[in-house]
Image (cartoon, rainbow, N blue to C red; front, side, top):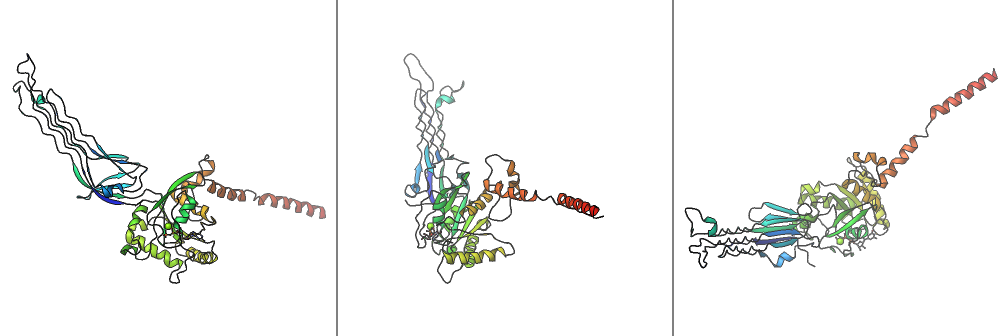
Length: 398
Ligand SMILES: Nc1nc2c(ncn2[C@@H]2O[C@H](COP(=O)(O)OP(=O)(O)OP(=O)(O)O)[C@@H](O)[C@H]2O)c(=O)[nH]1
Ligand SMILES: [Mg+2]
């Protein structure tokens, strides 16, 4: 299925129907007075999140969406029928802007599952409403008001907690296929992934988070090289980025530090905010000996930096290092989890020993041996015993 993440559409709410000018005409009732009913209200245009949708494809082909207008009022005080509302279904994470003013109108997602984006016009009042003691036969009724019309820019920004990024072939799709049930296409040529994939990953069987795998980035992507960088919008809302560096890349002109720096430059060129997001760095494919050697060397170099960066060595093929990687991801996502692989433990993670079953298993285990190691040190007792023994020996010698 084609993936579409940006479209422009025109929406028009229904107009209100006109009120009627009519008179009550019945046998034996002379001068029956006004009897014109109100016009019906126009239908609204409503945006609604559909969790089944993952693309804006439907709006690529049908770009005009009009709700029905209300019908006009009738005689015998009959009101016109209201126009039905028009519901447009959009995927979660759709940002709605007014194309003409640039104003953001809605951010469709869990916080805003439904929104009236264009209000239908009001039906006009029939002449029955205007009868007064001094004007008992009003010869006028209201017109209905116009329904709102708007040019909308719909932009899909997938809602994921974690974004996986890196050069093409770095092993991004393989990783998401191993940590979640997503089954993206995987192949040993660059740009296998052409559209983002989403997966729900489990952390130690306790909690889950949504991961996005996006197409590979290359140097110059901000100028359109490769697939460009526009799909970075799908990781803009992620809370943490997993930056994969291909350990087994055979290109002599590339190496791990250069790849890492190039991708970070691309992130910066796209947005400073994205470049400033927490990153968890991993060298992939360490089941390949060359990848492991290069990875270990770079890991040491990164640890020696002024601001040391923890580098994970992972293999999606053997699952090596994946638990530690996910622990670090979890530590950024949830404040009560502290990282296992390294980095600064979060303060909020400390009182975990007294917590119930929801507490993360890793940090609890990590905390226990430290306390246990301190307890058995009872030096003063041993010294006292030795002193007493020596004194007894001295006394017996005398
Ligand atoms: N040996 C080994 N090969 C791997 C590992 N992970 C991925 N690969 C291989 O690397 C190649 C690229 O993997 P993908 O997951 O498609 O890489 P990608 O980063 O998604 O690539 P693009 O979608 O093109 O950006 C495939 O042939 C995988 O089988 C790993 O842990 N070990
Ligand atoms: Mg891929």
